[in-house]
Structures are given as structure tokens and as C-alpha cells.
Image 1 (cartoon, helix red, strand yellow):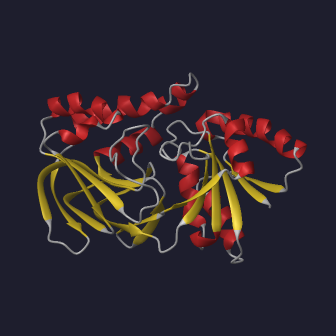
Image 2 (cartoon, one colour):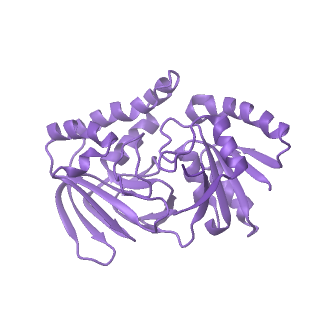
Image 3 (spheres, rainbow, N blue to C red):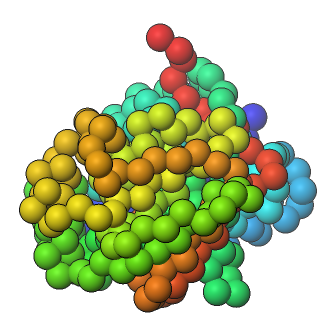
Length: 309
């Protein structure tokens, strides 16, 4: 079997390149058949995946990078049903790796991949806003969570904290800023073909394929990566002071029992806000819009995960 490695050498402030230098000697020692592609600019991983899968054949992609690199790869795949996917997570958030229990230690992650310990189906989400369509592996969202992703991406705090192994704190620090500064607006939600659900003042609506996003927030604890459904969380009509109390509980999924936390499950969803708000896919910021629509791709990828315990 031939493995195609897509490596983001700049992930986690340059750690991706150093981790690859640990991985490659192991591949050579085991005489593994592989090729490697290094990303050189934004969206390059998507271009690589698109070019390779254009032949319509089966491929095994191993992504060495963070959630953003994984997002680019799934965005570029032409037929997800013909792809086996593995991950060596090297980002600062690594939400993609949490639910399936992918090892954070690179050589252990490589061991899981080379042994193909277990293959599980994983959904790929699609999100449309305006006249453009995007894909996501973990989540997409509008409002507060997307604003956090936007400001983390453009601020220097994440790069600084990554140098000390504290990159996850960048999300928390900017979350506090956005809670104090961002406006809450009325919103309507359509689940599948049901009637609209109205909210007076939303903080955010997140459409989840995985249970975690934003550097470890356990927003949709019952979300499963291959169940053919999207889980949606809408946070609305809660005083800011209470949000500050609730936010830490979301790391353990304890937020779900409180008033103002609304969770749904669906095949497709439309979110419409009265004013344009920030939008993201897998933490990658997209230009502010009033509306997003999300559903699932027709075909699932197969994800390499550790053997069941």
C-alpha cells in the first residue's frame, strides 16, 4: 500500500516540519512505500488533494498538520468514498483528533496508521453561504465561535503561545474579548424541512460533525463522526455574566443542561441572522454573511483510528 503524506511544515509554529523529520526515518526503516507533499501557501493542501484524486483511483492520505490542513485536504478530495484518511495531528487545537481518539504522540500516531488498526466511516460536511460552497470535517458556525476563529487567525497571540506549548489558551483569551465586544442579533433556524425556530439574541450557532471545536470545547457531546447526521448548538438569550460562568463547563460538556443552550440533530440546516456575522469552517475564517446552509456529502471517507479498547 502506498501512503501519500501531506505535510504542513509550519503547523504549530514550525513544529510540523520538525515532526516530519522524526516520521520519515521510521518510514525508511520500515521500507514503507510513500510520497510526501509539503504545503507552501494557504489552500495548497486542497490543490494537492484535488490533483492527486483527479485520477478517480483509491488513495490513502496521511495529513500531518492541524485542523486547518485537514480542512484543506477534505476540501480538495474529488470523491471522498475512494479515500482512506489518516492523521498525525500537529496543530494547536487538534479538535479533529479528539473524538476518534487519535494519538497526539507522532510516532504512536504513525504506528496506528501503518498497522491500519481500525477503519471507521466519517462524514464530510458541506456549507454554503452566498454563492460559494465549502467543506468541513469538524464544524462550521456563525457568530461568536467564528469570530473567535477569525481573531485567533489574524492575531499574534496564537503564534506566541505556541512557542510555549500553550496555543489552546489563545482561543480562550480571545473568546473573553469577543464575548464582551460582539453584538447579539436575532436569528432563525431551519432543521431539515421543518418550520423556522426563532431566537432573539444569539451568541452563535455551530453545526458540528465532531463533538469538539475551538480547542477542546465539548459543545455537542452526542455528535458522532459517522452517523450521517449533523448536530447543531445554538447559544442564545443568556446574560453575558452567565456565559462567563458557563463557558468553562463546555470543556466537559456540562453546559448542555442550562437554559439558553439549544442542541438539535438533523441532516441539513439553514441559519439566517438579521445582520452579517463571522463564519468559519474548521476554524478557518470566511467573510461575514447573514446566512449559512449546511448538509453532508454523499460519500464518507474511511478514517484510520486506534483499535477499539
